[in-house]
Length: 186
Image 1 (cartoon, rainbow, N blue to C red):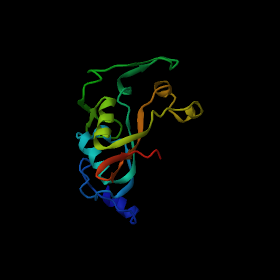
Image 2: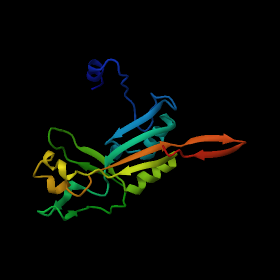
Image 3: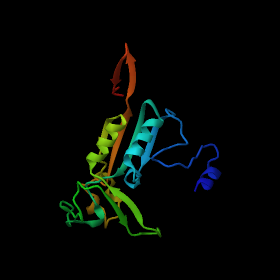
């Protein structure tokens, strides 16, 4: 994939790295970090979030989007009118667990992912030194229903499949020997 990307976009610096370490990136290198649908796949959430924090400049922003841990749509049922949805869990929601799903569509290998309650993500962000600036549970709007497979519309109508966090790396400043943590509401 890297060879294809480098061939198609020679002006972009593509790197292969372990997301829980990001060794190929210097401290404080980026202003903005975007993580799209990967946090639920990393076995080391704390290491990954700490690496994200390390590579951001002071007051840098991280946008993190991942599957909503509260709603598992693969094992759920919707009423015909879409007003009621029943989510089925094979284990307690508050239990952190490694999950393995069977291949689907064109994929040939099993999917390994990690269920974590939403509070685990908040705690990892806070421990790493991030401040949550914004949080959203994206949903499909009525004017976009026509863009969804009609057989799946009731499944996604009124429920969020994802969560999106906007985080800020808190700038640390020193004033007369006292450590001051400033959260800039930008």
